[in-house]
Amino acid sequence: MRNKEWEPKLFTLIKEGIGKEQIKKDIISGIIVGVIALPLAIAFAIASGVSPETGLLTAIVGGLIVSLFGGSRVQIGGPTGAFIVIIVSILTTHGMEGLLIATFLAGIILILMGLFKMGSLLKYIPQTLITGFTGGIAVLIFMTQINDFLGLPEKSIPSEFLEKLVYYASNLHLTDPWSLTVGLATIAIILLLPKLTKKVPAVFASLVLVTLLTSILGVPVETIGDRFGTITFQVPHITFFTINKETLMTLLPAAFSIALLGALESLLSAVVADSMIGGHHRSNVELIAMGLANTAVSLVGGIPVTGAIARTAANVNNGGRTPIAGVVHALTFLFIYLVAMPVVKFVPMAALAGILIIVAWRMSEIHVFLSNLKVNRYESAVLLTTFILTLLTDLTIAIPVGFLLAVILFMKRMADGVELSPLMYSKVDDQLIFSQELGEYDKRIRIVEINGPMFFGSVFHLLNIEEKLDKGYKILILRFRYVPIVDSDGIAKLRVLLSDMKRKDIQVLFSGLNDNLKEKFLKHHLIAESSIFPNIEEAMISSHERLKQRFSTIQ
Image (cartoon, rainbow, N blue to C red; front, top):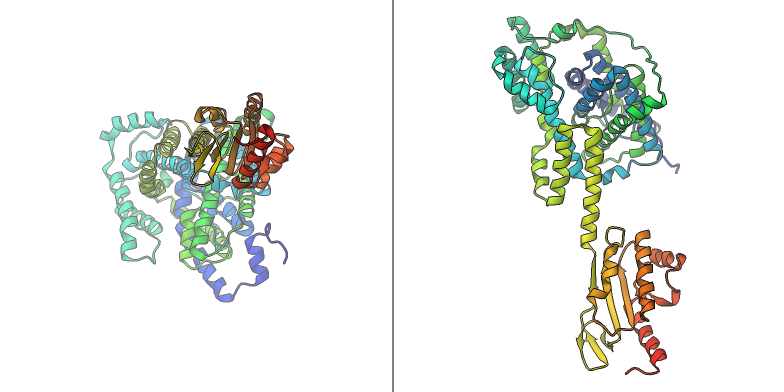
């Protein structure tokens, strides 16, 4: 059977054949998800500081490419709330051209990640790190929506988190009651409608109802039209930009943040979808598709794209089982963009703010956040550091610092878990000692068992072996049955230990080495093969023979 590792899921399913009944379900699901995603695409775009048309264009182009070339059966791609903070930061610092270049570079990085089969490696990103920065993003999204939710008159608000807090605290008295009412009504409909019926998309229904009521009753609130004018279909044009060395070095950190966040969210969404349908996505193909989608949307003036967990789940729940649903979702967007955009100008900004506040709350997963805080102080340190840095700096700093801290704390915990345990024994007479495991043996033999990986963070234990042993031994057996790896630092420290033992006329034997360690020790000429034994019993027999040869008789 030909290897399908690099084949998009849609291509595979077409070759295998898709039933007419399933195609019908996919088309219906795609239309429903397109309707659900419409207000989100507009809200995410506006919250990110770009026009509503940009969000729609991103959903159309990005969503189409993700479904055509992705590695998941049901993934829905498009703009998501997770990118809002990064996009705002890049726009503030580098402008729209800088955002397009960063998105293009992120696409290239994602393609390379897929080609180098890094899809499976992303599962090693600590959950506390992900929880920390998604929690931080959720708070920041909430903060960006307070102004429109309360209808405050000032539209140019501070960009820094602490400055925003001060601004809102000092301007609460300027709250517009109409905007607040519209925002609360939107939230109420989103939360209450699913309890009455699950057949109607709550977010879309809330937007339609609130827009109709405010328009019919003439409620004096700011609308999309007031801020952006009438939204009409515009044929996208290819955007050309110049990438020189200076631009590359300036925007590469932002590009890596977009790529990493996009990869994590996309693959997490694919994993969730797999659990819902009993499928198995192709992670590297998914990364390549996300890369293609981001490079494409950057060329037509769009914003970053990734897999959307909520929309993907909605696709599954409505019967979608093949990428056809994702393609129809993108085409539904295109149809709405072509014929219905003039109506969008009546949507109140406070309603969009209410939708994004719900998005932020759900993204925060407060129960997971609080649960992770209770695990241990190491997990809490990574979580809180990433969370606080996300709020006070940005993800280009929060992600690498949080990851570095997670790695350091992981190594410390691994090092703390390494044990050097001398074999317990009791004295029988002047020549023999006794252990429960091995019985009687010569008192000039000592056995030390090492438990755990010997890497640069833990090898200092090796140089403290003598502190754990009494005097008078002539043979030291190092029991390695529970040592999975030894890195270059471990080899170096073992060499120092062996040299020190040789100077003191003490022989060192090894027992229980796995095949990889045995090969490594011999390759580095650390010790002769005659001093390596598969188990402690054979090492003990050899020890007695060596003592006999050395001292002629066992005393």
